[in-house]
Image 1 (tube, one colour):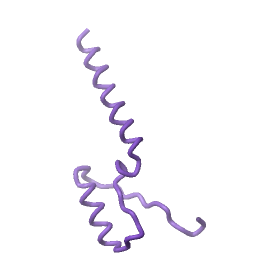
Image 2 (image 1 turned 135 degrees about the vertical axis):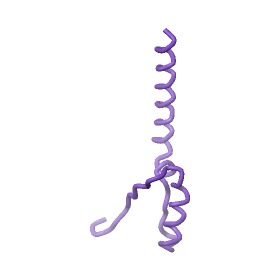
Image 3 (image 1 turned 90 degrees about the vertical axis):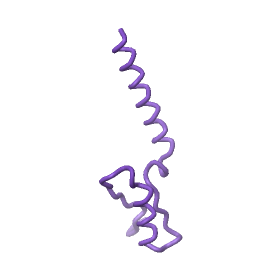
Length: 67
């Protein structure tokens, strides 16, 4: 892939606007052959693992606080 771009990362200020921001960028680019997705869509398995890990942390905190 010499001389080509395969990924561009944009840091958003508000997480609740990720899908809207992705749509805006996709419209601005105007190329149906390029895909614009928030990282939660791009790395679904990683995002799911993070959510499970976060839930596990809350369970551990609850158990510790109860004892």
